[in-house]
Image 1: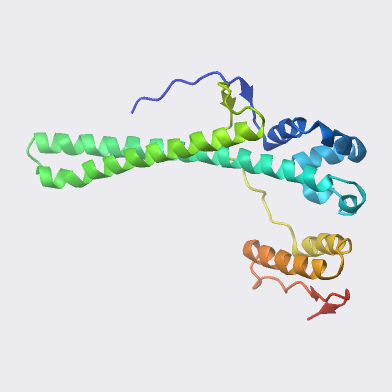
Image 2: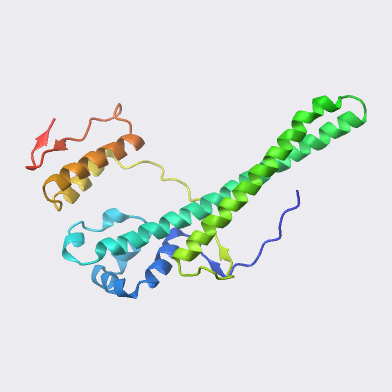
Length: 229
């Protein structure tokens, strides 16, 4: 299958942090939050290191929540757009392989080594791979359009330059002790039942990435702040 020529991008977004900064620019009213937090903390949040932001700021500085929401949405849109492009590459490779197999089958039929019935499954696999690629291309286009809309570029003919694959995952996950410490600091800023609900949701999220069989459960806090087993 011929490969489409590369188009020179009008705007390169090599990292999600770059998308976050562009999204923040659409909200000049939130600029003062960056001034208050400072360049280092702002950069860490843009890079997705939300733990760098002291949870106390969310209660002391107005609109920090909105500022974080903008960052989170931009990162999510960038990741979805890059992931969709990566899927397109996988589907292209699958179609190339299927087409090669189908061509070989046709030659086998041509020389009388195979019957058309034996070659039919490979033709069907090629047709299926072609449809999968078209669906992946549609999803990738929609994801890129969603990212452009979020960055204020909706309706623009500009071409975004995105990486061909997502960044590598961290070598190791966050230790449970670190998770518990950061969660405790966050909960101190949450009143009453808000802290209980936060801990329950955090416990469930942590169990997804770090099975409880490897580590003890986090203590469940009661609304009075005491830990229950």
